[in-house]
Length: 108
Image 1 (cartoon, rainbow, N blue to C red):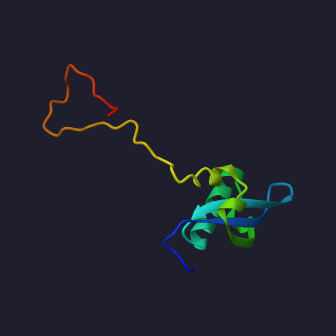
Image 2: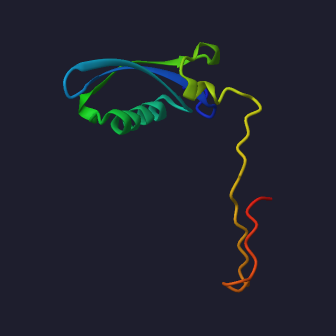
């Protein structure tokens, strides 16, 4: 891969056998390598569709530009001003007594 350190969008075309019929699918993943995107695909298919790895056939994997992405779960990370606030943090003091009369402050 040219740039294994930068995050890219990958489109995966696959076919898997459900309990009744074969199903064709297109899915998108964000990862730094193709192998990582395919690993995400296998785990996602197992979790969402209960598909075994032996029933999944990867047909095509391609890098997708940000403007060509179709899936909202991938598009939401294209915002350059995205923030991940740390909401419920608990400040732990080592030498403080276990039981006190005041509640902990979790928002800073």
